[in-house]
Amino acid sequence: MTDINVFLDAMGLECPLPLLKAKQALNRMASGEVLEVLATDAGSVRDFDVFAKQSGNTLLLSEDNDGTYRYLFEKK
Image 1: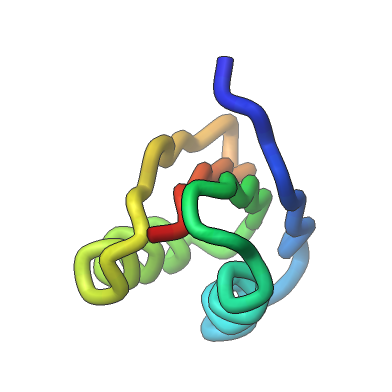
Image 2: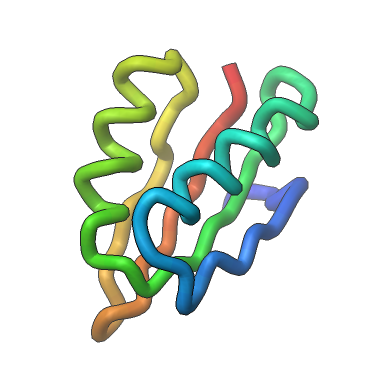
C-alpha cells in the first residue's frame, strides 16, 4: 500500500482543470511524496499519462472505477 501525502478531489471538473490542479499540488510537494487524484473527466486518462511522461513525475496508478478515475503520482 502506498502512503498518500496529498489528496486532490477533481471530481466534476472538466479539462483542463484536473490537470492544472494536479500540477499546482505537485509543485507544492516534496520529492518522493505521493499525490492521489480523483476525477470524472474521461480526458484526464490521456492528459495525466502525457503529463507524467513530459514532467518526469511517476504515474504509479491510473484506474477507472465506473467513470471515477483515480491516479497516484510520485513527485520527481
